[in-house]
Image (tube, rainbow, N blue to C red):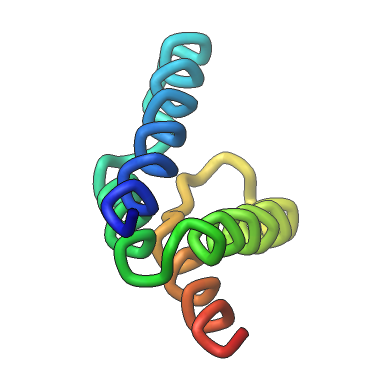
Amino acid sequence: SELAAGIIPAILLLALVLVCDFIGRRSTMGGGDIKMIAMLGLNFGLYRNLIIILLAGIMFAAVYLLNDRKEKMPFGPMLSVASWIAAFM
């Protein structure tokens, strides 16, 4: 079941990224973020992994709105901070 906790969110996010890449005709997220989500799922389980993705998305949106929207922003640091928060839940 731990394997499913790592694979399911990573595959769902990969599908979402591929659809967004196709529609937007540009790269939206790197492969390292998908791998990191898979590893976080193996470590924390499915429930906490989904919370990590949600928290990281909220943090990313907040920083994106405060930042210049033309520059690329990494998602990995947001995942790292969100995993620290989820570790103490």
